[in-house]
Image (cartoon, rainbow, N blue to C red):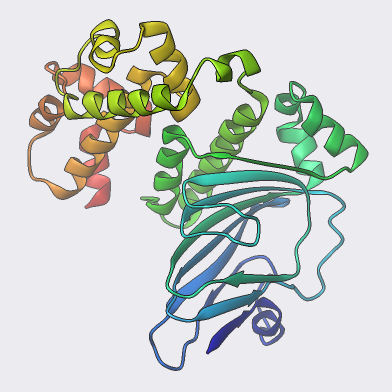
Length: 318
């Protein structure tokens, strides 16, 4: 059986609902497949869209919207968090940026998957006022915007992007403050993805990394995380995996989009956040668990990462 989720049909039956602010539950008469499609306008020209499904059956989503105003040249950022997007050939852990996106069409999802996808849609006027300065460094994006050409680029979702995605899905605020928080995080994600699009590895750098080097770099990442409370120096880490420190630095940026210790810092902060949510340890004890002997330094690092102190974060979760 193939399930159908129709935005057009749902919105046509609503009387008091914006065409871009809605949540449509997935209906499966057998009760085996579940999920929803949620769209929210954060401001005019800035839209957040989430598809979240647990599928036992094939699903077709009719994304057409009634009375849709003309959107001359939209910009889409799409992050595939879980599942495979066969429509654009993007897999979990990947994302794409597309110039020339337009709403309306049919999207197919295969049975037997957990699907979690987040899209950000930006209209051209807002793009020009907010992020055009960032794109000036990317000739290909700028040309696509100015000349209304199509542009499509797939890349890997970095740990920093994953952190922002986690913060969006676990927003601790409600009502007005929730909207402000989500808007700030969505724009942060846009900036990170544009920077990724504009930062390309040179061919000479890529040629220096062989498949065996990539495997060693992933091994170095595992060593780093296993010793997160007392990590080796970069030179020692490189020696343990049989690389020089230059190639290790280059490889970390190539594979993970950040430095080795930038990756470790993200991991430590994520571990601390999880412990604050699910553990009764004191803030000092949590700091020690993630490698901070000085609780004040831990509190400063956490606030720089999440915008609030560890204690305030824990109270907010409660």
